[in-house]
Image 1 (cartoon, rainbow, N blue to C red):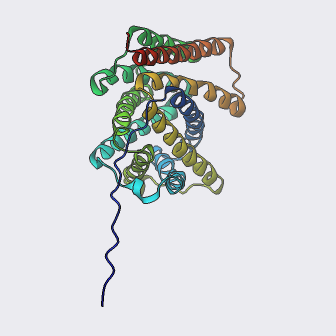
Image 2: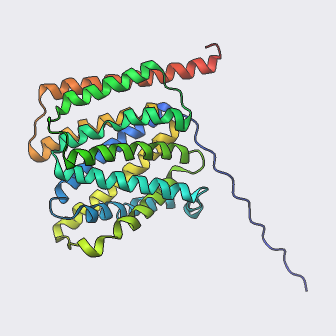
Image 3: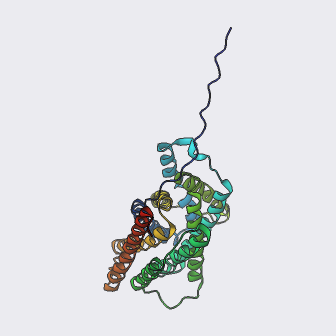
Length: 310
């Protein structure tokens, strides 16, 4: 009697990071800004009726639905094997901190003021990308980021009451967000974007569930739909953003966060009849111009590297 040889298991191929593709990265980042603007709008609505921890939990746990669908479509179980689990835990801790502080600032402040303060994050990311990622940021891109931030201030014209709990929450969220974005860039070198998104969504669901027994308010029937939409927007937005940071440097991608303010203005007009004023259009033009300039400088840098002459 003979036995058939055991079937050999093919070795798992190591993950190869995607090649830099700034143009595609920029397009994906712009898509994520639309979804995040929708997310912020829903958070602003729901946080008036439910605790921040509960809103954060539903944002995370319901995002597991689109993340699970994407994982099934793009590789299944093999995407659930991270190379650096501790790094994913650390990224999740930072991300949850940023999320909760950001949601708190939306609740305590006018949305425009909170968003304006949050846009200090790209400046911090640009600075952190040099020592932590070893990326080279030239003076032109530094200037473009600063000009873009000036455009944001033109749009929102934040009030002068800076030192309050809402503003401090927004500043803390911006700092944590900058570290989170740099960590995402590092994780993209070893793990696929969907793996990064899955573990952030999983751990953030666990972390935000811890205080629920003490603060839980059962959502009204109509609010379940808004909670679900918030989770879907957060899940797909997180994936697009993570994918974008795997295709281009943090200094190129991060300034495009400014674009989300355009979508936020549209949502504000549609929901609260908040019609943008001329200074909003002027600031938007500055923001878009700074983003296009960064794209131009990145394309020129890549061209010079290819030629090998400069």
